[in-house]
Image (cartoon, rainbow, N blue to C red):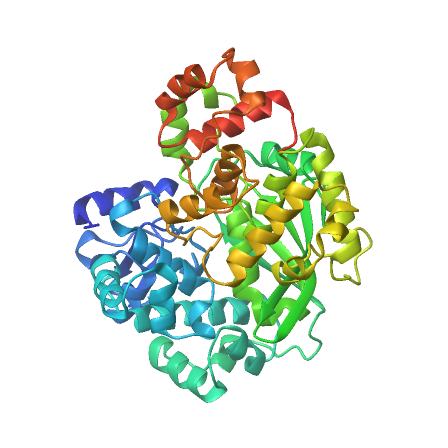
Length: 478
């Protein structure tokens, strides 16, 4: 994407939040780069330089603004097919992939060669993969220095730096100051709980998203109430497993969600925040989606498609949801978590994590049947786990869509409804649409799949969002 400077400057003058995160402005008179919604006095046109990403702005020698904080800008959606590979790689980098792996592994993850990925990434973002990753680590470190009282050593490691010395040198080189000087005072009493903010583009239909999550809540793993979403999490980093909980609330005045967690999850902070972004679809463009859906979205602007903190968990939900009334699915999954999940401490309502894919692959089918899952669907769940563990299947937005859908359809016991549900919530595909969904037919007054498909064609490429609006009317758990 090429930036038109005059258009960007008009957007800057209007402080149009629809473009927050889509470009950054560097001000030559100050050496600072900002988001287009920065509240400071608008700089003169001749002093403005526009960049596609924070990494390009920093490569040009600009430092991040301390007022609008570029690290809080919402991200890009993945609808642009021509740039999807590069953006998939960028998403993985933002989630900390290169903290434990190299560029060859990143290229293999998105399904291209090392050389090809470097070329298309530079074309899309204007910086190398290394420079992009370096900026992400610096911005994460800046966030930790600003929002927490964690020791600098822990900040450096949590941000993905291999050593404190490397972190100090790079921070000084890029931002012109020692990280320790970033804090006016040193608090030796580090709290047990920390909070972070993640930006989004308004509007945000927060109450309806919570209502969706409430209807599908897995007791013991999730809790939804009083404007808050909480869940237990378990994230593996190498041989270590980090277990804890998160709490997410909405700050509608600042257009941000606040994420609270124990400091025990700080080593996997990038993965935690990435999971929250996916769960609440924070990269969505409601200005485009709502306009396209028209009357269907009227009255409920800013609907999000709840994504996946864990793609495999969504897949299990989809498989179990095929067998009987969907209202029974959360109860079955709660029994699964209670029996096989990892125990969570220091939280009254959250007691277990959802079991890992490794554990499911080792379970005897009889153990799953005892929780209320049918034999055929237990076999499908174990098959899914095996496909993921062997690397033949990935259930995340960065996964190649067509080949992933094809792999899912090959698994015995998965209906097309389940495949589309997984595509919508685990793969983040905005055009997913289960045409054989019985709940959709009733409010839309269509009895056949063909009629429903023709009606839904007007909503492309946002059929998943349209489906959420129809489900909202039905008040059924999904």
